[in-house]
Amino acid sequence: MNTKVEDIKQQLDEFLVESSQQLEEFRLQFLSKKSDLQQLLSQIKNVTPELRKEFGQRVNELKYYAQELFDKHKNRVEETVIQRISEIDITSPSTLYKSGAIHPVSLVMNEVCEIFERIGFAIVSGPDIEDDWYVFSALNFAKEHPARDMQDTFFVNANPELLLRTHTSSLQVRTMEKCPPPIRVICPGRVYRNETITARSHCIFHQVEGLYVAQNVSFSDMKQVLLFFAKEMFGQETKIRLRPSYFPFTEPSAEMDIECKICSGKGCNVCKYSGWVEILGCGMVDPNVLENCSINPSKYNGYAFGLGIERMAMLKFKISDIRLFFENDVRFLEQFANVR
Ligand code: PHE
Picture 1 (cartoon, rainbow, N blue to C red):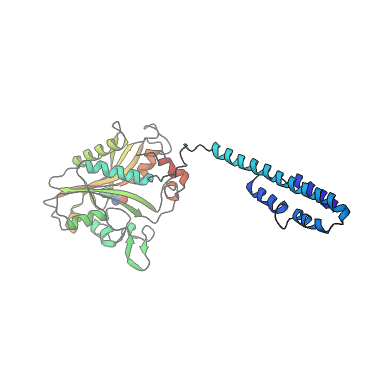
Picture 2: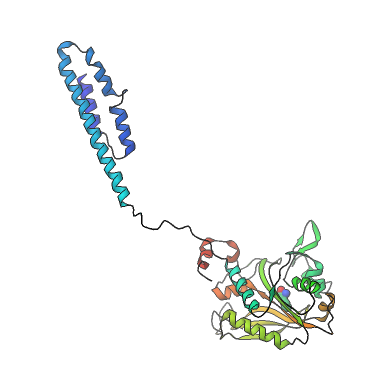
């Protein structure tokens, strides 16, 4: 019996109480009805009369000791809780949720649209899934043009008449079919090409198409609008150059370069050491296209251009791999959180 008292005393002394949970464990182990200590108390009456007084005294002392210890632990635990609460600075701002950022492709697309809107262009949009007429035939592509090939264009399996637009020029046709001239529109959109994905090209990208159809439109009208655009987009000191090119739907056709923003025209691997980077295709709308859209080419003419958005975003933000735009890695995207 006496050793039992010693045992419990030792357990009491060794019991570690540092949290409210441990405090409750302490209470259950030593002060509850089922605790060994309570058992001892209830056994006092069974002890032989000559030993009872001394035993009763020891067990009762132990009981008070346990209660005292419990009170001490309780005070200490409560104090630390209060201390912890007082250490919390309730005036400090709570953790803010990270807000999303506008995707760099959208940033550039919005900026391009906004620049053209300022000089009177209206925005139109149209379907990503098109048919041969809007993407090729109406745009004067010859029947055997390689762009119509499966290797260059994604066709819809369920209906091979349908395909994913390979350029936003389909919207030239849709607009001219619907609206009588004068027409002054820009058409932002996503386009699809069956191409190998590399650092420089992707099977999905974005374009902004421009179309102006009126009377007596000249090539220099187009050049001036594009120069205005380049300066607004890349800074007033920006230089442009037009190189002769070929598109089935424009005649004459050109490609426009801007002086490389990465090396300021000195030559680097982005501009392939030429000092210039191509940003768009353009030209005077081919009379056949006007006719295909029931616009009289002897009365009206116009110009069209198509800009590659990713290419411009790469130049503007100095990004060297087009694939980054489509991976949606937050570490990439959050860098644009503060770009307006
Ligand atoms: N559609 C052409 C392309 O995707 C660009 C272009 C548009 C060229 C309008 C001339 C006129 O490359």
